[in-house]
Image 1: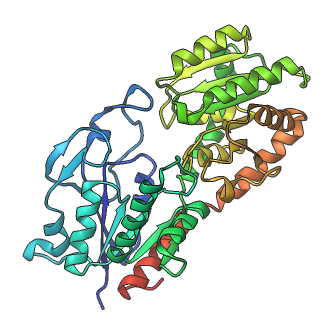
Image 2: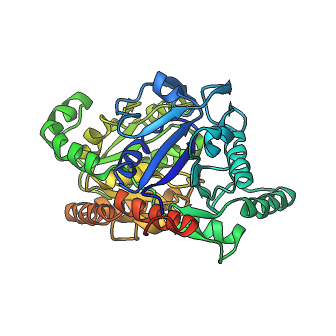
Length: 406
């Protein structure tokens, strides 16, 4: 038995959410992790199509784990089926005839040229494949023939992979639907660096009044926070309409503010709509980087993510680490795992503006409600962490290789 099991992780580019998890996995004494990136566009800086701005992440993306960037045939600086095409995956997996090959291929996603060629190469070489992806059954409507093609694709995919790493309940449901209830599945929760966000949020409290002053917010008034891309799918427009409805109803003793953090294609239209409402409590703050977000989490009384077709919503994990109440639509993938109605926050039917307005009223109607929900949110997210990810990954590796203990 080898002292270590060699794991190749194939992923499109360095991702701010994943870097701390990869550092944690690299600490496992019996797992030798090597990350194979298709592109470095997130490191060198790029224009994010969703945010519509140039992005340079202010957190370490490459520290603390072993990695390499694969030779490129195509690099369009974005993700997509054929946006990134590399060569050399096969030679890495089998060691190129000069070194030991890998015991496991773990790939992030399946719908790209690189992911598919990695999966096929691993199958041909006899290397077990573990797949992690975000898909859920709460998705865009598809025609009957597209659904048929999707079923055929997953039936074929099931013959090429050895196990799936489920990020949550809806993702697990998706795998069982397409691959069958008996297909090997291992829980590897979609988590963020809880310690980082909790520490940053605690530190932010000291500068709360300064941020209030910067945004022109009166002390004592509740703050409703949105922080995501301003795109149609994120449905910030629903929150804006619900906010207007809430304020005009005069249901709350203190009129809340609506703070919108993020940028994107819908910003101009949203700003025009906010101006037309005549309400003075709406603030647009633009894109904020990872280390800046906890300042806004700390300011919030409640956070809202009204998205449609949201596979997970990691921003919810982040804000729960600040101990804040959360309202999400029933299309947000993390909801069954992280938000129980009336406990950590509220869940409303996607697109139902009146229901969202009522949820805001329930959370903000009494000061202690938002506080209590925030405490429950912090308690729940603390157990949804990287340690659970490592345990799930170990169970999966042990099952497909028999070379380490779960």
